[in-house]
Length: 353
Image (cartoon, rainbow, N blue to C red; front, side, top):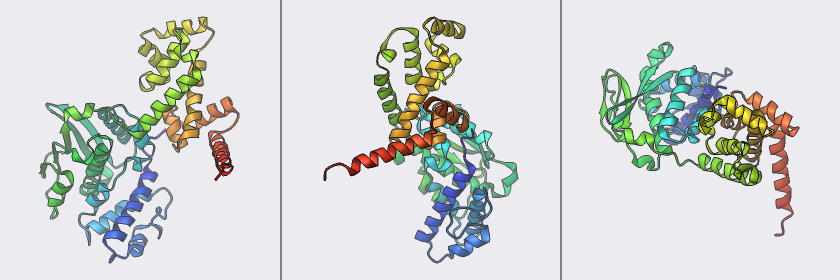
């Protein structure tokens, strides 16, 4: 499963760009810009299927070379974590900023996106080094401007201090543009141009900060409710209860795998399999039970997309999750979600006014 959803990001970029132009530059004919750049007139997507990110880049290039030189910075400043699709949910459920950064770096480097990055821990700083893919080197300045401020805005969004938190310093590997003061305004830290690398640096202490995101809290709530549902099956000291506890309390460490769970419990995988068998269970059975009960609660109590739920439950492909869910409950996950919403609506309609 691809965490980084390029078409989703492209459409979000187009919508944000449209809003910027409409609110700040009413003199610009956005219908003409859309026609020139292969964008539908409502700016919802590109006119060519699955090419919205490329269309957004064309529009940015046109505007940056013309009436709005700092448009890439303005667009990056509007970035939200969920712009990247499933990756955003992965970031929101990571335990620390460092883990979120590593998830993002891995997803970027495994995708066909224009940007690559790596995290370097050196001295007192955690440095994220950005490079642009060779196929778009002609647009590298634009991409770096947009992406580096976007990454920082997303980091600020998951930090307790929010926008009050600033980088240690930021460097760019290109000459200062005419609007260089905008970089200082947006990053609020020392900026250097003509550097050997494009780098976003922050204090090393920040990367170990826990992420107090709403989704993480939601997941903890679901896990707590499931513990109650499982009752003694969760609270007991037998091996099956210990496996359930491990899967609920440390899902990222266990990774819903026998090896990961055995490592968490400090038991050899073969021994864990044997102990479960002696207790009348298999790891696959216990793991599936926990996954499906959590899936049911995600569907009932949140608007998380099915892809995000599948990722959260350790499935590499949403189709695998759908198949497992159908086998367990006898209906697709979306059907179950729709039924529950209809039931909730019906109950609300019958309440006395």
